[in-house]
Every structure is written in C-alpha cells, then in structure tokens.
Length: 130
Image (cartoon, rainbow, N blue to C red; front, side, top):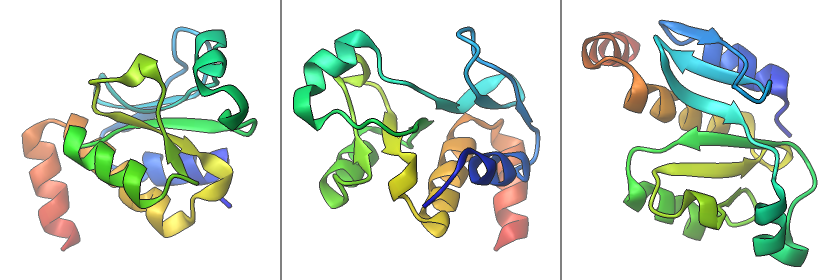
C-alpha cells in the first residue's frame, strides 16, 4: 500500500525534518540530527532468525514511544509490524511497507518524529496541529 514516496512526503512535512542517507546508503529521515525513521533491509542474521516468515518487500524501521507501544503494535497487526532479535529491548519497530495504509503510516511517522524531536519543537507542532 505505502511507498517510499509516501514515507518521504509524510516525513518531510514534519518540522525540522530532513532526508539523509544512513551510513549504509539507505534512506533515512532525521529531525534535527536525530534519526526517527529509516530504510532497513533485512540482514543475514535477521533472515536466519525470521526463517520462512522473513518478508521480501521494502522494510521501514521507525522509533516508537516505548517498548509497550512496540509490543502493542506487534500484537495488534503482525501482518504489518515485526521485529528481529537485533531490535530486542530497543523502542523501534519494523514495518512491511507494502502492507501499511497511509493513515497508519502517517500516525507511525508522527509518533516516531515526536519521540526524537526536541521537546519544544514537538510540543509547538502538536499543539498547532490539534
């Protein structure tokens, strides 16, 4: 459903956001200098851990507010959200980009942005949006 163009459009509409390739050359979005969403192809260890359940489409990684939010997403929609041992104990989720709808992607990116944005910027933007 969603594409990298959708991610780019939504992310870059958030204040203070810029697109900057990750160290591996993959797509990445930052607010100020803090990473909040990035392209995350599966690595060999991920593929081994996931086995037959490993997705083959584009994968987005995004910060989530906390580990509770991560667990809720994993339980709520395992067809869209997943994780790997690499992300155990880390407040970030992996997303099968082709399976997330645009409103949900928008909410995910906004929450990831708000977690990483400077508090003042986040508060000002969220107050103006409501």
